Image (cartoon, rainbow, N blue to C red; front, top):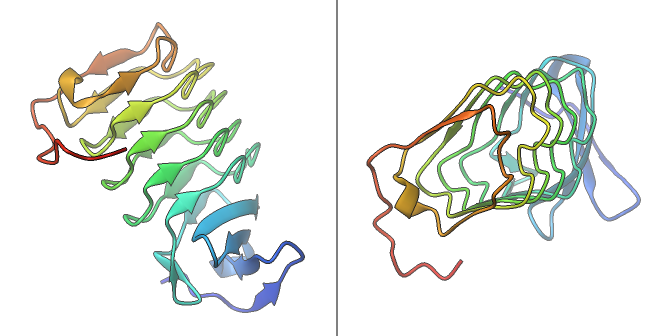
Length: 178
């Protein structure tokens, strides 16, 4: 798998996690379980489930912003929150949101102009303003759950040209406090 070759403390209290094969690095805050930044020099990125024994729980604000060489990403199942502009302007072509994510923040995938397909699991409750705005190539967004599964879907979360396909599976957890 993707093993860290060396870990270097960086100035903001995060640790630096080197991607396999010299493909760049991630910055990770061990206190919060948040990826806070990245410098990516490869097409396929796999974020590990844990870094130095700490579970990855959040993709932080603008963490992968304008990492345009990245065309695919695997986000670990432990991630619950994708932050504001987390993947703004990347080269992603398709995207599967992992099955514990509860919200996709404003502009999270803004201006991902190569993105054509997105899969959203029924854990997702809220999709905020412009989450996929200016994703001009986006054709289909497939939801595992029904429209009722979403407590909030911003009007311009997706481009008007994208087709939203809702499924039938609903989340069991009706009393979640998110």
